[in-house]
Amino acid sequence: MNCRLLLVALLAVLSPIPVLAQAEAEAIHWAYSTWFGTGWYRIGDSRDAFAIRYAPRKLVREETVTEGEESWSVEVEVPLTIGLEHFPLDDIAGSIDPANFASLSVTPAVNVTIPVTERWTLRPFAALGWGAVLNGDESAWTWWTGLRSRYRSSMGSLGWSWLYSVAVVGHSPNDGPSSNFWPVMTGFEFDYPAGDYELQGEKLYVNWHAAYTYIADEMELVRVGRAEDEIRDQWQVGIGINKEDTPIKLWRLQFERIGLAYRFSTDGELQGIGLVFQSLFDG
Image (cartoon, rainbow, N blue to C red; front, side, top):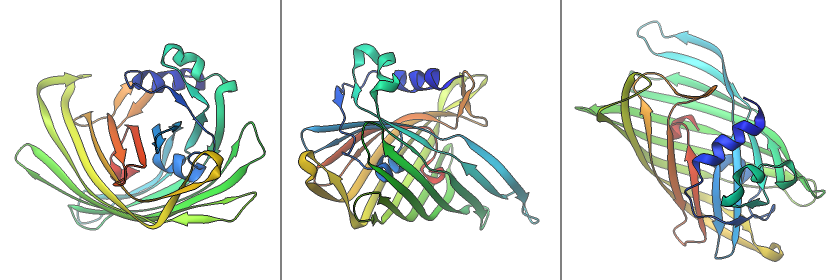
């Protein structure tokens, strides 16, 4: 599948969302849109931004722990994030015309999965990349690093996980000072069989999650005229579907799960709707 068809597929999933976004390229910086992933974000009452992130992954090494079946692994991913100027629902294909691209960033990342016990797993991660406004002269290096933790258990048919992560996300623009913020997240994920329903020959599960992120250093979001708002936290709730053992296949693409998430800050200044393709533990 070529890049254009890929973006059409991703945008088609979002078509029921009532968003007529005229995104400002500077509204959410590369570090923020790339970190948040595919979705629509609103700042205050008037500024909308839409971003698409595609992050192909490759497992470069995996080793089984001697005393069990758990494995540690090293994975490389290359997130490509595109910001759009407009997102008209009556012309989704036109939204991904290159002339509509507001910004572009590429942020290669490395993820390491380390099983501590049968139920507890750690995942250190790090990324470094570069982004630019396509119709201007602004650019920036972006980076993040941190550690995620997951404890998995079950109660009958209900599977659940407790997640925790701490990270630092930063950017260094070509014009202006560097800055960063520290998101500290805790949350829970659940999954439950969807009755007798199957998908692609496997049992279908419904999954949902709830998470809260405290931002140790305020995240600065830019409004019109480059005045800045500081965001202290973020709540996220989401729901989706997944198969029992293997990824969901759409054309040549594979997704661990497919779902939607709603994000918002306690003060209401930041709101967003995002696509979910994997566990919060995986990024």
